[in-house]
Length: 134
Image (tube, rainbow, N blue to C red; front, side, top):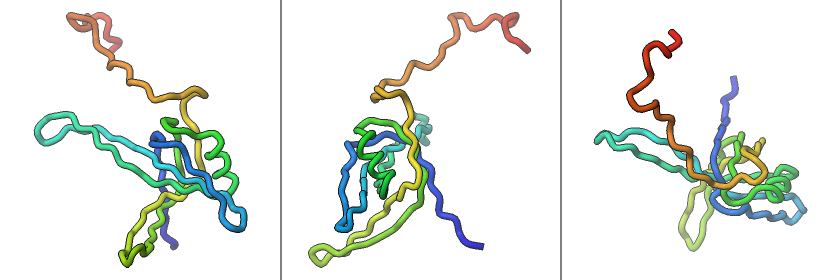
């Protein structure tokens, strides 16, 4: 059985996408995507950790990304991890890219980064036991 290399990410673009074309005219779009997770640290403090992912998109999907995506836009990316390396000035550099195979825009057409709504708080004094449905 062959292995599986599949990644799903939901995050926001850190900058406007960069559109380019290869020498043979193939579209390629690159952008950074931030994903965040929240957890409670060992000291009991709330911690938010943000990871940055390099996204690479090819062909028609690249053109769509270049046309419709912008900094702050929330998207879902489905793709695969691809590792690479290159040498510059005698130093070997390693890369980790997510090669997108599908992209879905999330939020509305004017989607912008917004502060989250405050969490739900029960009324002062709590909820009367008679109002609990079980």
